[in-house]
Amino acid sequence: MSRPGEDGLYTLSNRQGMHVLVSAHGATLVSWLTADRDGRMADILLGYPDRVGYEDNSTAYFGALVGRWANRIADARFTLEGVEYQLDPNDRGNHLHGGGTGFHRADWSAVQDATGLTMTLESPAGEGGYPGNLKVSVRYELNDDGALSINYEATTDAPTPVNLTSHPYFNLSGSGNIGDHLLTITADEYLPIDPNGIPLGVESVDGTPFDFRQPAAIGPRLRLEEQLKNKQMKDALGFDHCYRLRGGRSAEPREVARVFDPASRRTLTVSTTEPGLQFYSGNYLEGVIGRRAEPYAIHDGFCLEAQAFPDQVNGADAEAVILRPGQVYRQTTIYRLGV
Figure 1 (tube, rainbow, N blue to C red):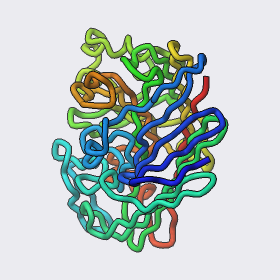
Figure 2: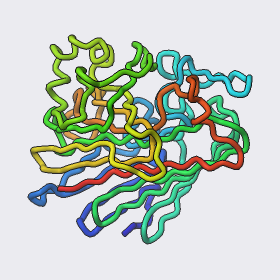
Figure 3: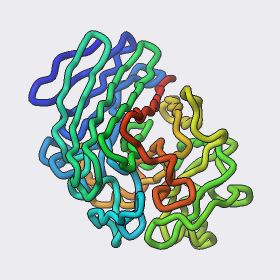
Figure 4: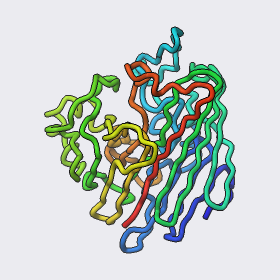
């Protein structure tokens, strides 16, 4: 069931009593109210206390849909068909999440119906430095099994890189540190990064803190003494790395991650068609003013962002992330909550 928006806010609900609030500004997931095993309601998404914080949202990207390019592009530039394109540098000289004119700052058109919410956006050629006029649509649906599906489509009139994702921060307890959350990621490899967040290649997770092939608590690996043992963890202040998921890109969504919170007994699963999954442990949340009585602290939330690989447009597999006229970019990611 869905409810028409007021002031750009739209509500999706289901028979479990879940309520997901979506804003037309940034196509943003604002909140997700859901019960734990004892029936106690909590908002399991982090966010700002009012609309003002979402107007920019270029620090935390709380719940935003980010594009044209999720994650980073090295030196904010790429070459396509012999032409070099200079993008908006907004992160240590790199391009992050579409730059200052990214989709997280746009006002999307919205149409709500009985089963979900469709939002559309037209990004003109040259915006952020990208070639091609891009038309984007995203559809949010919440079913009675607790699955929030996000379906993306995009078309262009000129070749352009496209890599979209949603950027919600989860805390399955509703508050506090995420250290007790048990995480599983079905990936045998991850992308180590340089101090500016750009991938250095691909490495096995075996024998590293990045191995979540079996359920493991996040907290012990975030302790300072553990971070100091691993340069990747030390430089990033925790996890901010992309995993190469088993099987690569798929035609249909498959489960790639699972998170269990022992306190609330809530479980979150992530299914996607994408080849990569960025795990971010909220390393820069310290002092951010949110909806709680106290400012957020480091590691108060986590992100699992399905996407292509960071800086892939500058790599050997760049063609896989170039959208051309006559093609349709499609992606599906599903976040499912249960107890």
